[in-house]
Image (cartoon, rainbow, N blue to C red; front, side, top):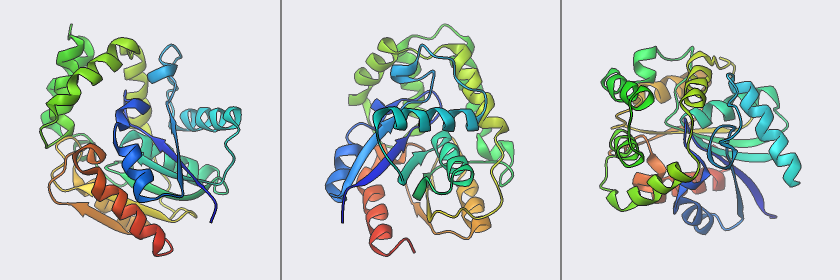
Length: 252
């Protein structure tokens, strides 16, 4: 079997560097995997660009990036949160592009209500981050508290550096939030085999969103009992093993 092109997509205002050690763990668990990480406009190395206000616009940009890099499909996609919305749209709009997809801790209309897609306990913190005068350190500490359930204080300096090196503007953060909030996925089951992974103790997005999505599409779901929203950070080994087992089973 030849190499598998796995496209990794992060979530709202995050970039490819936030995958951290998970990339190496994934490639060690699935040796035939070739991971390609993409940033959406407005994030990471593309932070100077304007973020699209639609998920479809982000998908078109990702496809253009892969074409420019000479990375041919079909692709396998692993994506978290807003990135999983891109994967869902990609697999429906361009079914021949996507060989398989893994959607982690995502939430989409019409499957879930707004208060499930973003837990109300986070509204105040997000408002302060977007409109307040928050330092890079305090911003990243707040994100860490909302998205993880394990002590990861050691990564704060790196996350702070990412934000200082490639800051996401408030305007782009709001444009991404708008794209995610109004995105409506198809109720039709994707052509591409799909695995949904979720965290029972996700403090940012209710696990019910992943349960509803998997039930509607009739696709497999695996739920981690203790991890937070950033599942690949809290337990990357579990994620990689779930994907490996699913792939070896023939995507069943």
